[in-house]
Image 1 (cartoon, rainbow, N blue to C red):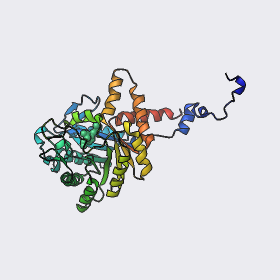
Image 2: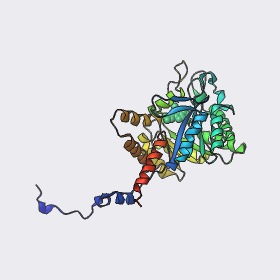
Image 3: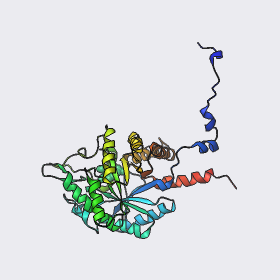
Image 4: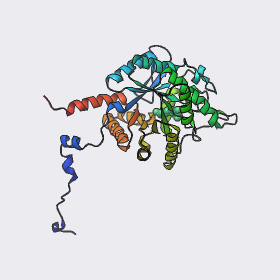
Amino acid sequence: MSSTQDWHLPTRRPRRLRRSDAIRRLVRETRLTPDRLVLPQFIVDGRRRCEPIDAMPGRNRLSIDLTIEECARAMELGVRSFAIFPAIDGSLKTPEATEALNPENLDCRAAAAIKEAFPESCVITDVALDPFSSLGHDGLISDSGVILNDETVEVLAKMAVVHAGAGADMVAPSDMMDGRVGAIRSALDEAGHTETAILSYTAKYASAFYGPFREALDSAPVDAPNVPKDKKTYQMDPANAREASIEALLDEDEGADIMMVKPALPYLDVIARLRAETALPIAAYNVSGEYAMIKAAAQRGWLDERQCMTEVLTAIARAGADIIFTYAALDYARWWREEVGRALPDV
Ligand code: PBG
C-alpha cells in the first residue's frame, strides 16, 4: 500500500483547460462549419412530389421543384453544395444503362435547374451506372456475369461529359472501376470542360451501410442468374487500409481534384491515412446507414440525436476530412447557428 507521502501533486493538469466553456472554446481543435458540408439529394420526376424514404427519417425523394425549395433552405443556412442522385423510373432502366447518357435525363435536368436557381451553389453529380441499370450494378456486365472494367469506363467518361454539359461543378465517380479518373479527365478536357472538377470516390468500401440508399433509389443488385449478388469485385474489402493508399496514388496521378473515403465513421483510420499522404482535399461520406442508425436510436429515445450527430460529424472532421457528405446537413447547420448564437456574449 502506498502512503499519502508517495503521492505527488501533479504539476501538469490537462483539466485546467476544460474548466469553463470559454476556455474549452479557446482550445477547441476542430470546428465544423456548415460550409464544409454537402447535402445529398434524391430526385424523382414529376411536380410537387415528396416521397419519404422509410429507412432515412427526415429525408425524401423530391421532384425538381421541391428540390429547389430545399436547396433554398440549405443556402440560407450556409450549406451551398449538393450531391444529386436520381431515382430513375423502372421503365427507363436497361442492362446497358443507356438513359445515363441522355442529356435530358432527370440527373441533368436537376443539375441544370439547381445551377439556374443558385448559380453560386456547387452541384456534384454521381458518375456510376447503378441508378440507370436494370441489373443494379455500377458497371456493365458480361453475359457470364463479369463486371466489365474498360467498357464501363468508356461509358462513365461520356456520362461525366454529359453532366458537365448540364452545368455540374464537379463530377463524382462512385463506381470504383480502374482507370476511370484518368479517362474522365481526358474526356472532360477534350470536350472543353477543363474547369469541371473530379471528386473521386477513392476508397469506397463494399459496405452494408449503403442499404437505405439502395432502397431510396431502388438500385440494389437484382437477384438474377449471371448478375453478381454484391459489389465486392469493385468496391474495397472493409478489412483493407493499405489498399486505400494504392487507390489514392492512382487517383492523384490520374488527376483527381478531391479524394473521398466512404463510408466515414467505420473508416476514420482511412481518412486519417489519406489526409497524411496527400495534399489534396479529403472528403468523407457519412452514408445512409450511418445516418439511419442515429435516427433510429433517437426515435426510440436511446440516443440524443443532436449530440450524437454532432459528435460523429466532428469526429469525421477531426480524423482529417475537409468536406463531409451528410444527410443531416440541414439539421447540423441549424444547430451550428444556435451554437454560434449561444457563444456570443449578451450585449
Ligand atoms: C452507387 C452509390 C452508392 C452510394 C452512393 N453512390 C451505393 C452503392 O454503392 O451501392 C451510397 C450512399 C449512401 O449509402 O448514403 N454508385
